[in-house]
Image (cartoon, rainbow, N blue to C red; front, side, top):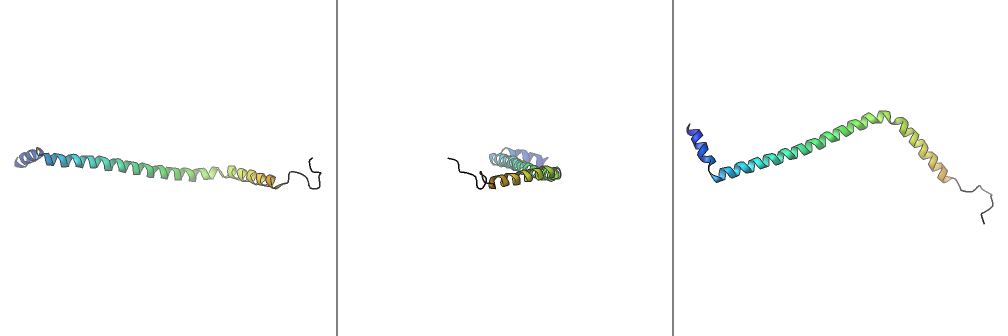
Length: 89
């Protein structure tokens, strides 16, 4: 009972209330920061898993894109006119 009465008297002091309020604010701040860091970490892991999963199925698409890219490079290296043709006047 004396502990309870002592605690009640201490709660009435302004300094104790102020410390408890600061503790509560810091707790909320650190909890929010922890949630942000945890969500970014989980998004990173999910992105990594999805890339690993999609790499299995994207090989044919990538091969097709590489063939198209090499075809486009070959077309840009060819001259516009045939060798020995008359220049345009």
